[in-house]
Image 1 (tube, helix red, strand yellow):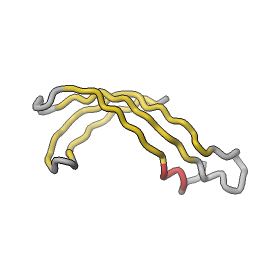
Image 2: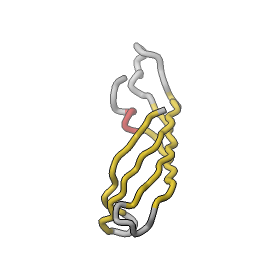
Image 3: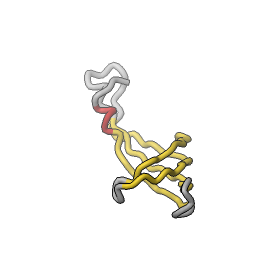
Image 4: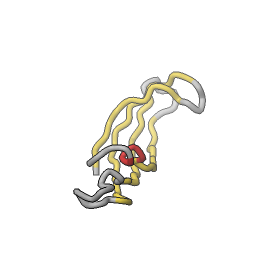
Amino acid sequence: MRFMTGFMFFKVGEGRFAPTWLTGMQLTFPILDLPKGATQDQLGVDAAIGFFWEHDLQDSGGDHLLVTMGFDVLSLFGSK
């Protein structure tokens, strides 16, 4: 479990500047976690689900809950 916070400045879908502040928790689950010292020990892959509260800094859209899901694919290219 990880606490995360940060800012988002641009809405890609709408193509406009829209500053928001996010804070919340992300849960990460290992999908492929080989033991240390194995030949392919850099092939760890994680799945993540996050729950964030998003606050619109321009007060145009209000506050809302944001749920994210994803895979940590960059862990495929780094060592542990």
